[in-house]
Length: 283
Ligand SMILES: *[C@@H]1O[C@H](CO)[C@@H](O)[C@H](O)[C@H]1NC(C)=O
Image 1 (cartoon, rainbow, N blue to C red):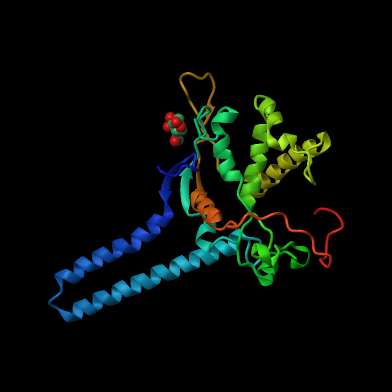
Image 2 (cartoon, helix red, strand yellow; image 1 turned 180 degrees about the vertical axis):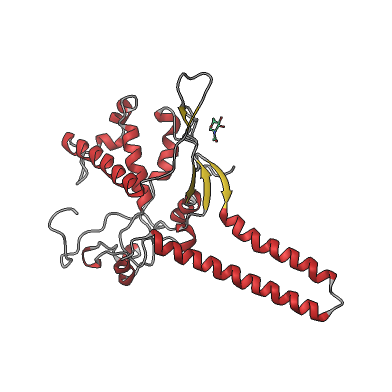
């Protein structure tokens, strides 16, 4: 498995299946065509069958993606994402690795694993062609949204949810008791500038905010997969098997897409234009 971001095993790739199935159909038809190549009528029949097959597969895929959009996003929103539709689909069936000491690249001492976390958390502002119409479809009001000045390429000032969510988990990781001494030496803890200044109160609020965000995210997704318990000879009571199977988005592909869509120029926070409409307090 060459997917470095998935700390679980891919059991089954439904994308590959969808692509290989019609191909399998084609192969069968092609062999049949070969056997009957002397008879033009049969050739025509088979070609028609192949074409019908392709069209049916195409329609099935289209229906599936629309069905997914309908059932998995807020019914009031016409869209919930800015990534291409194929990336927002749950295209992979994977088995988590819930073995207690599973050696993921995100586990270990601060120095050992910090680079892995930085890679998935620190992503710059996205550089996307998002119109006011798109903003409304996403359920937001474009009026108070910040934009980059033209010299920085314009566009809305935006990042993407999963990086903030992973940042929150990363913050909890960094402030846990065995990493805390290292955390205190880090740039984050010594940050004494600007709105994010980590005073003791802001630090507590930030950690609490992250815990609260993760709570909302986990409750939003309320995973209903059953966890069975197994007999284990070296354990005195049944032991939970957390290696459960899930439909997942392709994190690797989404992260690559995001990295390919960050602003290519180094940008600063834009200044608020005097004429802009602003909220009275942070949202
Ligand atoms: C989880 O990881 C451990 C340690 O690498 C490995 O022995 C085990 O087979 C893995 N389990 C699953 C379900 O992939």
